[in-house]
Structure formats: structure tokens, C-alpha cells
Length: 111
Image 1 (cartoon, rainbow, N blue to C red):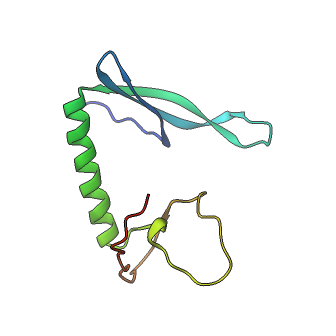
Image 2: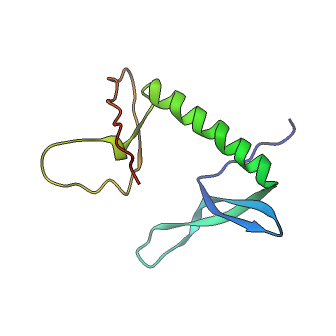
Image 3: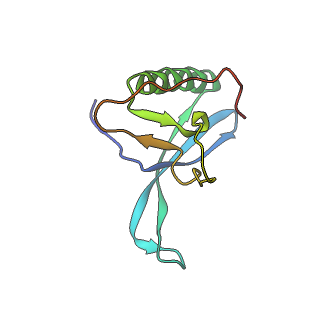
């Protein structure tokens, strides 16, 4: 492997001429919105056949499950907490440090 690419986020995913195009972005140090928040700036893209995209997506799902089992991330859609409502849309994945308690998995499908 000769090159590594860093990305803060996936900027966009689309189908162009029968190929899946995934565009990645990084946080810009200089470009800010009206509220002073840093904007995402497109960096690079990969282009995959639909079959390669589905294979990649399957591998990512397997890896996410392994990270959840290890307690490294928590899917907030599975959280069930008492008390006032809270906004979890800002951080859909919470990184945990140290040992974590196992998460009860719901059998109910979440959309």
C-alpha cells in the first residue's frame, strides 16, 4: 500500500453511470459557516462497481458489530433511558473509554 487517505466524514454517495461513487470530506480549518462552525471540504472519492460496494458495505457492518461487541461504540438508537428527552442526533455513535457494560440488544426493528 502506498497511500493513506484521512476523512472526517462521507460527504456524499451516489450512483453515476452504473458505478457507486463515495466522496469523502475533511473538516476545513479556514472555511466556516455563518455560525463560525468549520465546514466539511470535499477531499477525494472512490468509485466501485455495485457488487464491490455491497461487499464493502457487508464488511463495514461486520466491523461495526465487532466494535459494538467490544464496547467501543454504542448505537444510540438502542439506548433506553428514563428521564427527560435528549437530543442524540448530534452524536449517533458514542466512543467509550475503558471497560464497558454490555448493551441490551432490542429485537424490535429500528427505522
